[in-house]
Image (tube, rainbow, N blue to C red; front, side, top):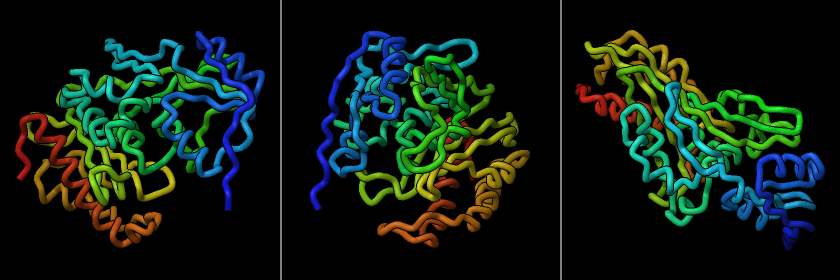
Length: 295
């Protein structure tokens, strides 16, 4: 069956966010935002994008920046992934999960054009940034003709390609709260090859007291549900416990209750098994970034 061609009637390259918001208000559901273009290209060639009257290019909106402030990081939504990867802040233990995930987004050609906002708004659970955003407690700043609002990342995704963004809204900024002292973070993924999407991926942000006791843990998992999920039972099993390997393994046991989505690359039983190993190794990696040994 021949797929329909993706041929927007009009192309716009606005020079300001306000101009973009006006175009979205004018065209409504018939408008489509273009950031890096990697996801929209894949969807278009599969005939998965409805008729579009206006394609709105975001590349001239001056939303490529990273600001370090007292309460955390502020990142422009059209920041290119490869540019973010070069920044020293994402090598610090507390933010290193973001650097890990950026590095794992393959192939490099995609990193050079894809944007952070696009990675999150695509709402695909096997992408690498969404689980990291969940573990790192991102929030998104959305702007429309009716005003501005902050959206918690935990309330952002609904299903594949579907988010809680309202009609006419555009994500302008991603915010990452400043983690407490003694926080380490990490991201790991398992795919068929280094270039492939994840079968399962996970990210951890963990705060550790001086005696090796877990004070707080946030764990995101992808590839096991239609949207990224928090492993809250694992987090509860770690909090207040000394971070020994045996305690970490014990804390991952609730992952046996997962009901992962099956794919041609792995059934539910396989995904449950590798999720436990992945979370164990990601927690260990995050803790060891703080100079502590897990044994």
